[in-house]
Length: 230
Image (tube, rainbow, N blue to C red; front, side, top):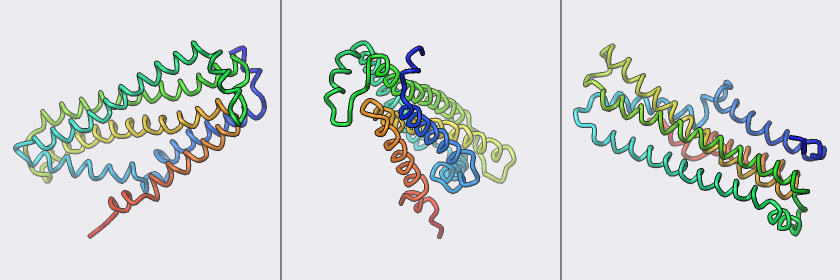
């Protein structure tokens, strides 16, 4: 922390842009009045419909397979994140060599060793956050598996079935939302790596990531498919 005074005004501004883009988009896509129009919230209704259909089926092999696919995807990202974190920790131990490499980059260097370590810590923090989100998502999908295994059989007009379906859908939504937060952390982790080149790279990449996320969540073809009515 004693090296923070070495950060230039440009570094602080770029860091502010990075945090504002990440935190601002997280609020916009999850808590604002526009959140319901996005890809994340649009999928919630389909999860509830899935829960209703699951409770009507006596044989739930299809549901188990689908949940297994979701768990596999989250597990893949969680395992990959561990390797990324290990690589970043190793990079912190070889900061001198990495500093020499960045000096030769066209956009400028990462400064001195202390500054380089701060910049690497930002990237590391992004992926550590992603790891916690992925592992929590995995635990919630395991809870979903338990709910499916204990699910009763019935039709949606029965009060008990209605309540249970909403419980299953809620668990599915919570797990999926944390998975999305982990993916978002991956995107901004890539933006954070731009700081190794220059503060301008960090700011520009943060804004670009923001635009990409917005387009995929609010202007994508798959969102049009979910909104399609017959």
